[in-house]
Image 1 (tube, rainbow, N blue to C red):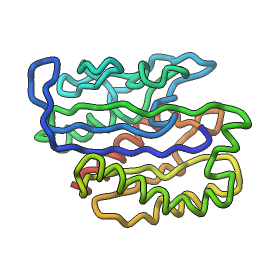
Image 2 (image 1 turned 90 degrees about the vertical axis):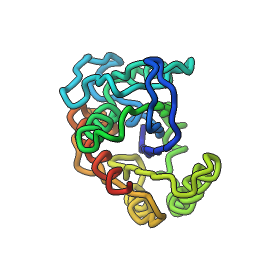
Image 3 (image 1 turned 135 degrees about the vertical axis):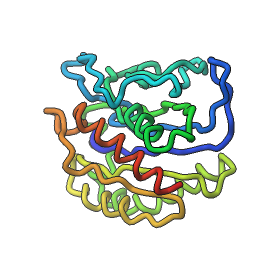
Length: 225
């Protein structure tokens, strides 16, 4: 994708997992292709490399497209972002880091719902970094999105961690980044992904970058809590 927004939302409602245990937290992984996971994907093929920080954990589950809970493992979005080849994303390194630093938060339930957009000129036209008006409206729209999510979920202080974009087409990347980094809502944080290594397409994060991003998200999430 030309740009991406990642949200990680935490719900305190308990859920029943397939294992019969009681989960303490649901983490919603939302956004576009970088959250969906393109780490290790070349020529529409994932290399299958899963670093230690992203390995499966018996206390981390994911919700499948048919609404079943199973043990989580990458690619987390393989049955969600079905029109693309999914690879490694930040979700598993985030969850592992979270439990490493705060074991009492587990078990965790990951809900993958990120979907990458189409490539080509249509995608470019739709990017907020291409159109000046869209770029200038980005901050206000982002606040509305967060407020609407919280209202829909009945949780006015639902913790949210977003990721400031690292790449994009068009002249307004920095305008969008400034809006993201400037959000001051309660219980929100913004992690800056600028400088993390990209794949040769200069749009998607590499496997190493996805692992690093997941750990950055976990550290920010704990500060929100």
